[in-house]
Length: 73
Image (cartoon, rainbow, N blue to C red; front, side):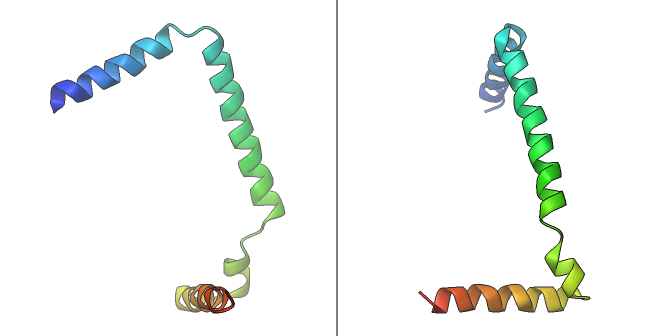
């Protein structure tokens, strides 16, 4: 098992070392993920934390929303 894991790690390590264009693409992907995360945090505030004061109240709201959505089908 350990030998297989070592071979898999070596495969990815060697593959990423030999990349030329791939490194740039990975950087673009990471920048896009950071930007999308920042935009999501800006446009979608934490509704549950803002409207419910306790974890139990949040859990009850989520459970009610999920069971109501399932009952509407």
